[in-house]
Length: 391
Image (cartoon, rainbow, N blue to C red; front, side, top):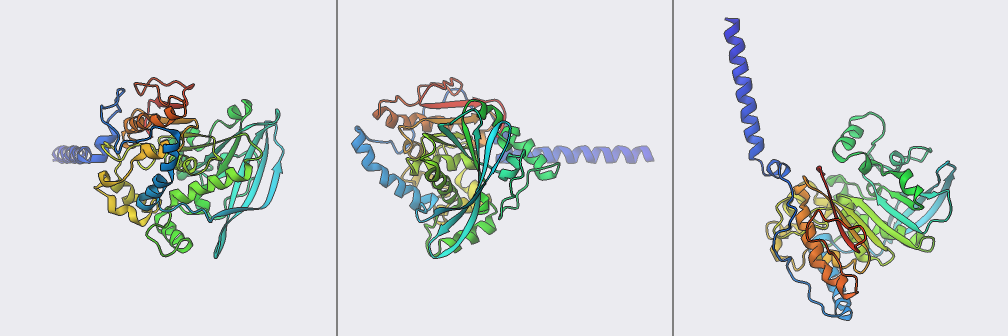
């Protein structure tokens, strides 16, 4: 009798597992996660086609492209925001000069918000290049060798052995959580770290409340991505006189902001955008991965309220993301991707870089020369790198 009961339980357990697996495999998101990106891009033209035969003709188009970005998806660029330094603290360290800056982010007619910024400079001598990195984890979790204050308005914590820290390291990897700071410093580069949710939360409920309060009365009010991008621009303006080159660098959502910041400010001299996906380097049209609707269902605060009108109708957008990339020309652009991260559509990112390269060509820079996703050439002014793995 007990044997029969055990067999029945085992049967129903096995049947339940089979049904669960069948259900999961029927989900579009799971099906996409199991795919790999092709090495040869599809022969699909990125639309609308960028039309400019001279630098002058292209420069005249740029304000209209920014206007289209703002009035459709991203919301207006918050040019009224400004950074005011409150104080700074210097820390001694064997491998770097570490400074912590406390800024007030001001918006006329509204209460300001505090934002921290950590600057690491090599001890070996002057540095002419600053890598400006927006991080998921608070800056005191990224730079742990000195007692940097915890961000004022952030609830995120990646330190210790907590579940949040373990999940960040498992899903994103150690270099996304903490870049190889010592290696970068040893090459003579400086590193700047900020944590955008300190100013605008990355929780949809809090962020929409904060955005509506700071930018009331418009369906074109900026989304969080636009505000976070403006923070990088503000830092670049603060340190422009100190560094000859300022390069925005980010992963995923902060890969998006690295691109947007450079598209709006010539204080930024180059971009490293890693797996920025939809709303970043990847095209909206013919996208096999994440759609605009997917993003808005989980992160509605990233875009303006007007973005919802283009869900399921991305082809009606007057631009696509190759236009965003083209605003960065003629500066260096590197796009990082992962073979198993079809959700972020590496192939669409590659096609966007191909289509935008015509603008680099106008400046005599030749743009993307790769024919396949795997043919990475770091010397190219527009380069595309793909690695094994996921997001």
